[in-house]
Length: 296
Image (tube, rainbow, N blue to C red; front, side, top):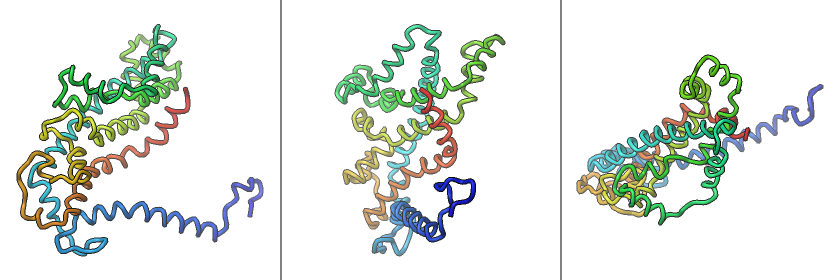
């Protein structure tokens, strides 16, 4: 029943409708949570477990994974690539986005902006990228996983739109006080853009962490493989975990455990860091993305 002064679409739904909504939402939540529960539970299963969910648990799968040093080394590689790559990407993207806001002050800025937008429509392809990486001497180098994707046109456009939303009066006041362009950017623009910076940093971090294709193309040395490539080779391709990472150690516990337990343990290890970081940045998502994407 509609309340006086409120339009009908704002009226509070009846109790049966609310109960139905609660049932539907609960069902959706359970459907979404079940894969996560299954993966984590299976990763702790021991050799005696049977059925859809394990009946007994142990840490043998994780001990077996870290015994060969393959996953630990791959995790360190992924962490290093993600941290360094995200820092470089944020430095390149923020400075370029700020420069692209100065269309009235710097000649040729609009042309550069259209060139950046053009990369969202036209790509060079795998073979030219490989030839470029090889000509630069980056094959079998960690930089081959960073430099080819150091800047994203989409992220630059989002940052530019956010920077353009900063009041011009603030920038002009800083100039009157004698602040240089670098001081304005570092002391005013970046502190006012914490929301969108957190979102874009997470985008870059997730992209670096989940990337395995560049490593597959450019890395021949198994000791330099990131965790996602080890995960792909073992879980998707079905290779032996120690062979996939170039190690020869294998434990007796690993041979006794179900193959699914080892696979799911690798999945948990590869997914956990992003799941841990995301809740701390989630509150910036709505503000950062909407503000950066609305104004053109």
